[in-house]
Length: 84
Length: 145
Image (cartoon, rainbow over the protein chains, first blue to last red):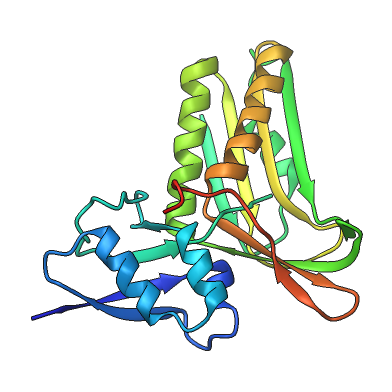
């Protein structure tokens, strides 16, 4: 049994994509490290996979650690930031 | 007193200065970040800002709260950022602080800007004269795997 997790994409993760969400499958009790691995397998370019290593997963309220359980709330993948 | 905003409209510095004012405040500091026409030798025509609106607003509020903790609950702080495509010269970010004396306004305003640069979920894609575009490398929000 697996769980479908839609992940919102931002910044360079949107490069060349028509959609802004990538849905991956993880175990029901997966943590963020396992979500990261699932994303790695789902991404279709070396650049995106390389970017994933330097990116954070987050909810609307906080950045997640790899040891955190994948929350039920909406999840986003955040590449390195550069506001201003 | 805190005001944060994420906007698709032009940022007005007068709104920031209106917020950062009080009879007891003898100083107001205003920072405007603008789109530059050159980056690392490449002529730039515009920048597209992508951001996570809800998390960005939460991070802005956290940064502003930290400024009040550090420089006093009496200061007024303002932090706003644009999203969407901006031409050269347009303001992408405005930070402002008012306080009784200038030192706190200078220091707190710089704190807002520097923290925003490394903590807010904002990304920019530069558009160049030759038609090419590139997402700018930024600050990692977590330790790389």
